[in-house]
Length: 101
Image (cartoon, rainbow, N blue to C red; front, top):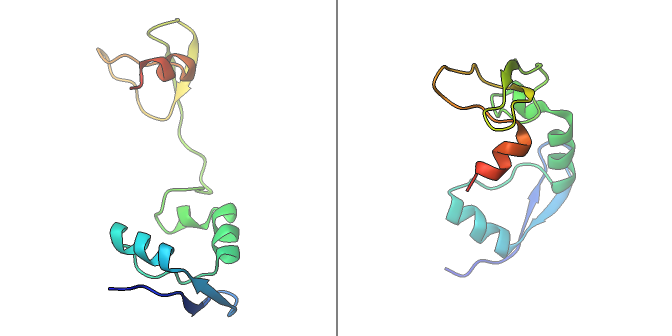
């Protein structure tokens, strides 16, 4: 199937934007539906953090629960976004980047 550029209307601001053939191919490969907002409105929506309120998880307006921990490598005190469990090492951000593949 040959894909061609299509013009779509933004549900947010009503302007017409081009949904390019390359973008269509990418959306099909990932199983995404067609975009409903123009690139400008999508960017504004991301920067406002509205995705967190809808369960998207990005940019949530709620403060994240952080837990105190001691880094298993360097011994520095740090905070992590999960409850540390006994027997499982916890690393500060510097040490974690060394352990990550």
